Length: 493
Ligand code: HEM
Image (tube, rainbow, N blue to C red; front, side, top):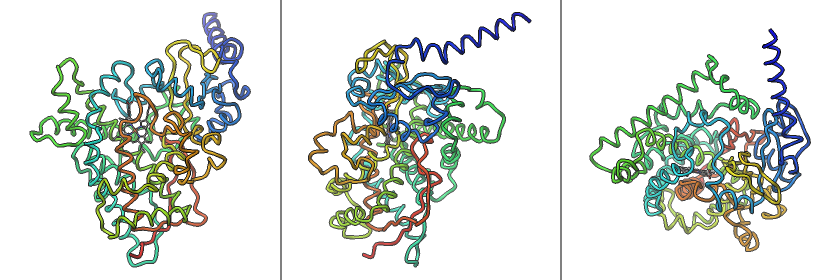
């Protein structure tokens, strides 16, 4: 009995030391500005962290500056970084001293395996080197016809919904993810998922995974207390069944690729080809190849579909911007069914501004987590090794000292303003991250979004539905929940 008492007291003392004494009286991090102590167990989840993450972090940066200490579950200290100089230090100058941080690596692995997104240090360098050639600009440029076709498919689908009516209320977020899933199927794996026309197993699996809407506190509890995800409840069963479906399809795509005698120009064909040419000990393993497919599937369609939805929402909200954009497009695409080329898409300068402004105002990934493998000094403060560092992309993108007093407004013209242009760098506009771990699909996302938007805006007009509301929520990415409904009508000519 006494042993139990001793064990209990030891546990309480340890918890007290870890959750209270160390963070508040001993850790050098206590000298860094931050919000006052909140809850012993819930940290700052008791108040602002349970709000949408981008806005919570932006609030902290505005209140306390470019480096801020805050506390997660069990009062674990985190640093919030929104000073572009420190961002540069972490992501660009010494990226391998600041690996990606995962509260629960196993949970992340379930989604994307041990591929590029999770790899660290030398393993990351090796995998990235292998993947780079598939994403070469010359290759990505050849994807434009597939992107344009996807734009026409989306436009035709919505035109059919409108039919002979003047306009139709359409939930734009229903079809967009299916379109972008089909695109990554084609350009990524030369595979027709046909999600827009059939009840695709894959689209269904992603729908289950991403339609989940837990609070930030629940997500943090799941990450810290793994047993929660093992509970025998329907939700988790569906969750694991969906992950299994995605893995099975990824394995099937690899098997088809390996058995194929003809090699295409899709990302996987190029990757498998590059891999086969390497000495055996440098090659990606079978498991790593499967992980890359899972990574490309999720990274390559959820991000683009989220950004497309936000772009259309902001265009609908700002009719003047919509008119200006359409006028620019109409000068080039005189015909409704025009199939624009790469050069024509690149001519559309205001479209480029709309694209950048969408990713500035709502970066799909509002923050990225890193940690430091050595003690270091940041902005004059001692940061002990293994401190989680939250890079607050959303806060940086909304900083009035960079973007002006209208930083919270959707204003694509700012990208034409010489003063703003002179202030923008690769450490203060970072929707795709920065440095050697930055998004591999950046150029592809650029062209895909612009091609689809150009075709859709050329042919359709979007208007807000009065009284319709949704919330911006972080569910892996910053999404409009439950979705976006807009009035859609056909452009006359
Ligand atoms: C609007 C669209 C997109 C956005 C905003 C976006 C954003 C990001 C961000 C923030 C990262 C993390 C960077 C870091 O941790 O340093 C990332 C990584 C990555 N993205 Fe994207 N992404 C987009 C589209 C795509 C597409 C279309 C693909 C591929 C088909 C893709 C493939 C990847 C891969 C493979 C990585 C891991 C890179 C690495 O760790 O080396 N992304 N992306």
